[in-house]
Image 1 (spheres, rainbow, N blue to C red):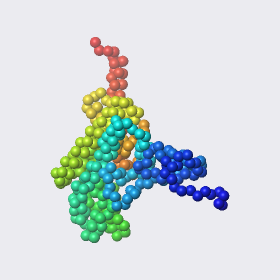
Image 2: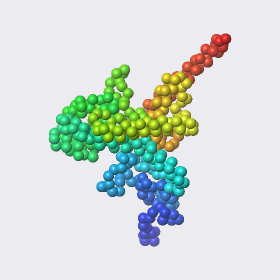
Image 3: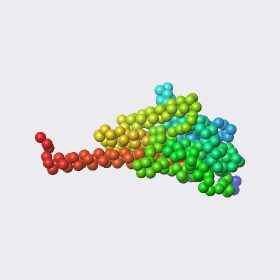
Image 4: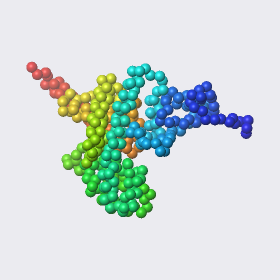
Length: 341
């Protein structure tokens, strides 16, 4: 057996340059660059395996506003492929930094972090008064699932659900005797009950969403927190406009899926508002391929946003189709009657 086995040690991608082996096993972190990833994934003659890390190295480290709690192996790999380690000029460095810190991915993460802090006491009070026992309520509030539950309550409220009435009803619907994590169970119930905006038909109101994706934070919020939220909301809206405008100006391939912008003023306004949602989705989830919505979403949060973006995309196509049909109808009438004098 010894003659067929060599003792090997883990090495960095830089050290691995020039090394060739039968099988390579690569540890990929969110901070990896595409250059080092390429080197590491081309060392094995027979096979190369990548293992993507999603957890923070330091369990005690405080989360950064830019951290993505919904990161998946696919999204991390996509980020690595977009992360070049090549030396940049001063101008390129400035542009890259502006893109990173001014993206909807970053701004939305900051907005949600601020909203979670600003509304923590409100949601904790709501949970304590929802019908749970004192022990159950405190267990839910201390759970890691309390953050996602709070975000779900904010989303429900943005969709015009009365969470003060809804939460006690959902708590009373069924017991928690077999629940390992009460907050996670309540989160699931809220998510199922509020999948669509409140109301139906003509009484249904559109969700109060920033750039068509991010639920607004409502209720009593301190002056400083409210100012910080309003600032980021304005930046997200402006960024969505800028991303769409740049894509249309450069005729980026994904914009073909939007259909032609209508010439009718009212339809054009509606078309652009829907197109902004698609642009915002791409920027938030760093979609770079030609398909308007990129790869299928993997997290629950992204699936919700993808559904909104898909609805917006369908709306742009319908508006473009209406414009096209009307133009065809006018052309047909002109051919039958001849040009007017």
